[in-house]
Length: 69
Image 1 (cartoon, rainbow, N blue to C red):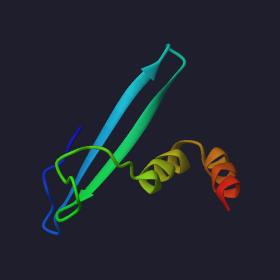
Image 2: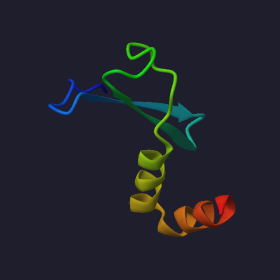
Image 3: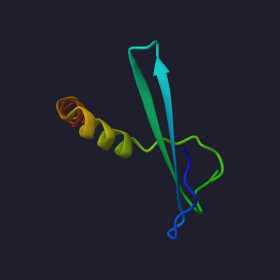
Image 4: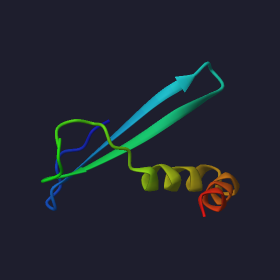
């Protein structure tokens, strides 16, 4: 899924991939107008990914937060 550019010049993209019928991997991308390589999807938005995990599995999100601190 990909959004149009917002009024503030940000586009978002989300990719989901099923993993052998036992789960999935979701990756978020956010690009701001003026960023280098604006039209290429190379940079993940890990904050959005963590927020998704927090909505689905709050305990796992807490462990992920603790691991990076």
